[in-house]
Image (cartoon, rainbow, N blue to C red; front, side, top):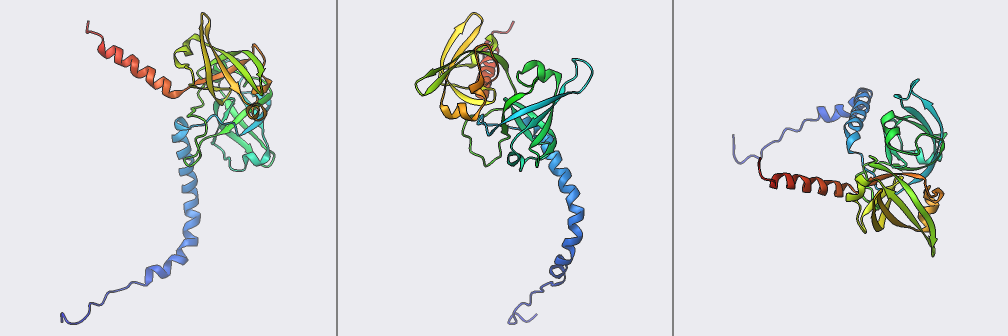
Length: 262
């Protein structure tokens, strides 16, 4: 080889020329694989779905359809929402209903309706999902969404009871009695989810029958959620701050590690 001559690089033109012709043939073969991959990704992420506690729409449970003949079976909820709310919803997506994470099992976006199946276990550990009526709705958090409330899993920790809902200036004071088992997770200026709504605790009072918390509700919250319909004695779904749960777990394990061996 003469080192004075420039190196001639071979440029292959066959493959680039074939790409436009191959694309139409590849697309039909790829679509089923992409659909299956998306469905599998949804299934894998079911336990990692997150919410923020910022209600995006008030819907309504129109009717309940039993999934079996006895109490060990759950129900299918037929939920109505504004048609535009469901434009970006697909089968298998997660939607929190009154704070409880549910999976969309059927969908008619044009009519603004969808269904979810609620197990007997979920019915026993929540409230407001066993009858027709208005419900708070929130779609699952996407990676680029703003986290305006706090991290919410959609797993209800317990059912509380409203102790008061009274006006204070332009706002309203909401009192809720939480079960004794949740008292250790509730703190002044901490976060709590009530029927799916992310709220800040303004007062905490331990009682023999549980822990009473006070929350300030601004008019906007009352107008865009179902909290304004609550009355003393009404049950509400509660989810404590997940960070508080992790702290409690770490403290418990720390005490076990520090305990002298028997």
